[in-house]
Image (cartoon, rainbow over all chains, first blue to last red; front, side, top):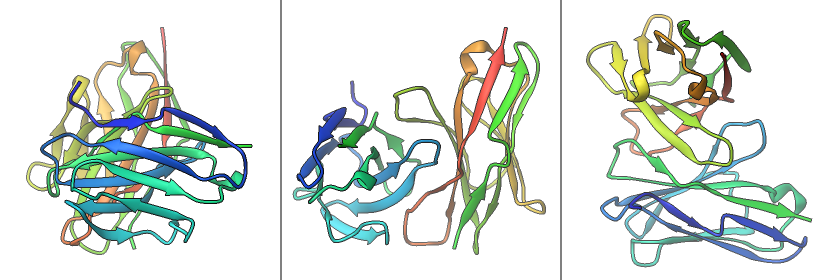
Length: 112
Length: 115
């Protein structure tokens, strides 16, 4: 499968714990995006990278959130000191430059 | 700021009938418009896009969408609905001239196709 891959698919964590998600984009895509989707809503933009550079961050991305793409390939999204409001589906997408983005299946986070 | 409105939370249609899922948008520059579909517990799948050119855009699975600049709309259509088309549909917009690449999504419309 050469699509966008996200790991894990599901994560249950206790409030206050840190979690990290991984995204592997389509190999030839140089742009990588993170979105968050809560139940019944459309995805909301969090951040995006072109190669290893993080070019844009949403105001939704609080100080507890950090994203990296160290070698311009895979990316990680870390949430520190999780809160119940962080429970959502975290979607990763990739594109070649400004072409359409292709999405992974997402990581569903539940904070208990 | 850019925004998308999908005025219908749910659209019901009988199999074989035509379907329309509505979308209106707001951007300050030229719009890049997209439709994505989401099946349960899955990510979003790209259906089609409008960048420039012909106002009628054809996409995957027999779907098409019509760009109407004066009405700032980009409605999704299909001549004959299938039960398997039942899913959640999202319209998205990006400002074409913006150096950023942020997609703004609508709230989604659930399409229910009944046999």
